[in-house]
View 1 (tube, one colour):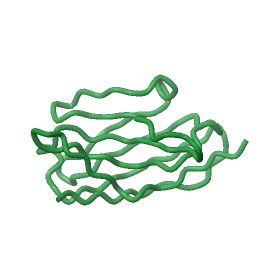
View 2: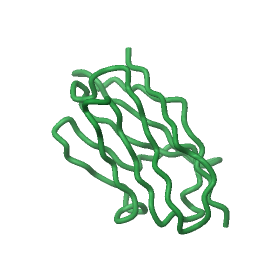
View 3: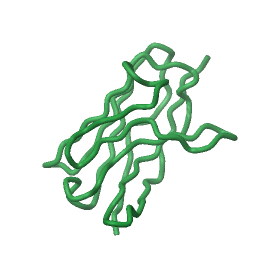
Length: 117
């Protein structure tokens, strides 16, 4: 069982920055990948950024060049640095851990990010 706790969401003006944190209850180097997803009202949950065990990162096109995913293995924490925020970035952001041979998914409780238009 993996527990994930997100923090760092809030309200920020367009053009501003936020850093989200996701603290995991396990050694994050032992999981296949960790990622950030987001879900806006009435929309599906979409991948924002992910980092594999080996450190490879990938980003959704809308956030490339603005968001950066990183990790601190010693702290079992993954971060999402979000710069140049736009109103369309408004959503609940969820941390995800994909674990094991079957790729079981674990989710945090979500943190709200609001960028007023």
